[in-house]
Amino acid sequence: MLTLRLTPYSSTTWTYEGGSYLTSDLTSAVTPYQHPMVEHLSVTDGTRTLLIVRERVAQRTVSDPRPRSLTPAMYDRAREAALRWPADYVLIESASLLPVRISAGAARTTPLYLAHHDGVLHGSWDMSDLRRFAGTLSTKEAARLLIYRPRYGSETLFTGIRRLTERSTAIFGGDLYLHYPEPALHSSPRALAPEADVLAAFTEAMDQSLDLRPMEPESTVFHLTGGFDSGTIATRAAQRFPGLVDTAALLVTGAGREQQIRRRADMRSMLPFGRRDHIIDCLDSPPLHPDCARVQGQPLSPYEEPLHLPFSRLTTLLERDGARVVVTGLSGDEMVSLSPHESAATVLANAHITDKLPWLGPRSRAGLEFADDGIAPPAQVNSMTLLSLETTAPPLLRAGIWPLHPFTSPAMIRLGEELPLYWREFKALQRRQLDSLGLSHDVTHPVERESFVWLVQHALRTYGAPLISGMLRHGSPLFDAGLVDPDGLRLTLRELANGPYDEEFHAKLLQVINLHLAARAFLP
Image (cartoon, rainbow, N blue to C red):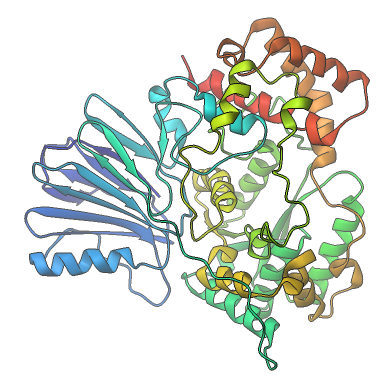
């Protein structure tokens, strides 16, 4: 959403020119991301200055970006109003002889990474902008990522780069202090009234979410993967904007490929979608291919899409065809997820994982004991969703495309939390919504699994194995840090080449390779 360079205890007189806010001594600068879905403004009372960069909301005139002077009382009211903004925002506050403060909203759409050096705070939505501050590898964060058990918090893979999490505040006066918020309050399932119309409530919640921002259907593309989540959002949009909603998807490999083709064709033929359907066939764009920017050594954040090549090619295709906004089905899983009390499986996921990963290094094994230390408190949006949004945003932003995720809206979250179990398990809510549109049984009750699992298997055996062999020959920062054991990795490589493929464990080699490539790209 923005990049920044802030120097506390210097000038607090801000001007706006050339798309950036600058202090009179040029020691501080804030550059908002330029996009029709983003606006920025600034107010000052002569002592304090507040810079606001935020997502636009519908039916409001775009704010004038030039600084405005207010009385102290009006300034306080403006700040309070800014904190109630219903979409994503970042607030930056500066005042004479005080540290600078940066606050994030609850509806995070884009990440903000922070780093500091020599009394100056730097920040960006693109981690590669902070490459020179990366420092060393964080043992605890690397251990989480290596076993596919990420945790949402201020730590990143690199000790010199931090993450500003939702509703958090960063205070910088030479050293950086990050303050987590209080835990967000959540609702609980409750019994439905006899006359309750759940699908009507679901439709209303989708409409509220789609209507929150000033989306232009003609320049918006909806993910339509064939899955329930993107399917419910995209079909609703097609009903509301007949003939205007174009679609996009990655075509999977493996057992579910033909089923995905049929299901998507059924949805597009039954609803009035736009004529363009943007498809990237994963058969032609496997992860870890030499054409992948990550494999070529570009400094991509380790939190960006692990299947980078097919997703980046889809983004390029959308950019070429004029898309400015992409709408996803992210967080649909979390909306109807079961609580630990409702789930029959109460054993912590991945509790046994270290027994099956011989390549996990001694420092990683030790670090897992502290994997839950220092994480952010419960948020309004599920923490795994927040990490997924962070994965999705940077590649789209580089292409000038803004991501929207309707399932993360408060209305959708509240509806999901209050629904009885029988409306949430097996995605009954989404299934019944699609069924109400007259879609086929193939769409609402697919038999085959539509997944990237076969694509990952192919990529690891075809392109991943040579990359791992290169790590073993030439070394890796992961070996040097004791995070990955080369002997165990060598053993696993032989298993991958000669034995049966074990999805649960061999697939995690993708993360080993991605973290190795990120470490090589970021660290000196």
